[in-house]
Length: 409
Ligand code: CA
Image (cartoon, rainbow, N blue to C red; front, top):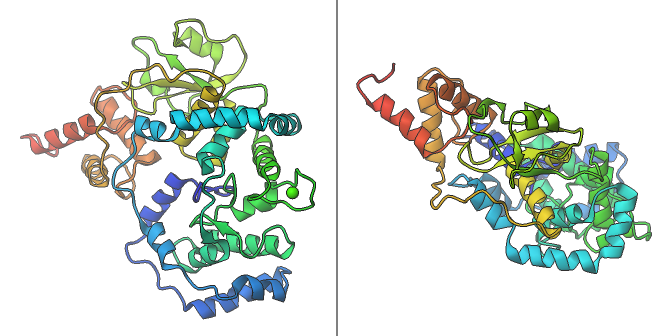
């Protein structure tokens, strides 16, 4: 998950937003040696042994490549279908099904103890590391020291580094452990604070090993989910059909209604049947705007968001889990042509909204909650479908009007 724990995991998209909001010129970092001495003092005060610190930091220096990766900004926003098709691939579905069979006994034991269905565990595993293929190749101490020393998000990563040292001190994590560039470890890419709080020893060898022990790694993921509110007898949500004239303002996680309530408003399963008669709360999501697919999402969907705040990630976990259970692809048609907005387009969009008096925060080229709220307000006043979705049509409309004779009106 590269870097997604916040406070448990930091969401990729979330951190990009944080990064963009930072000033162009970051504060000057203090010399690494001095910084390290202070950090070691703090670690000693927290009870970490001097020998652990000596071993952990032997030869550790900032890794320039990590700073480079951390500063990198994706040029194009990912559209729903591009994101989904890149992650829920036929190959991954096939392999996930094989692994469900291969590890059935283990997965059933984990499911009984922590209440998370095997297909969801395998879906997380597949999305995080392609079932253990990519653990990341950076030395974890060096990676976290680099990011904790860099002034941009030093507080968050300092806490991660100190948690890591504590785990090394008690023998949970080997000194030469590898991670993603942002310090996420093992099969399910746990950050150190998550490791400390949620990792479990499920194979009974007395250690919590997220790399070499699949039982430990999967049970730890299940423990995290179980303690974050997962309901083992429920699914994540489903693709639905919205009635003509649906009020788009009802979409989004802020609006929650019972299934009976949505049924009354005309929401149906994709095959036209009634929604299940179960008393659960649900929200409607339109990840590709009102012209794209619609989803009804339940409580477990919100728990996936605790793992990773990205809506597209959560939809991918849910969909992959469904595919592993033999359900088919989403039924809504994929548009022939999807034009992703570039960062420059999004900046333009934000500036144009700002010029018209809508609050978007500081234009940063990233669509976040403020931009979506501003889009909704604009859509409402322009009598457009209020779905809060940014696409080229919207951008062109904003550009066109401003370029016209009534510019600034
Ligand atoms: Ca173990």
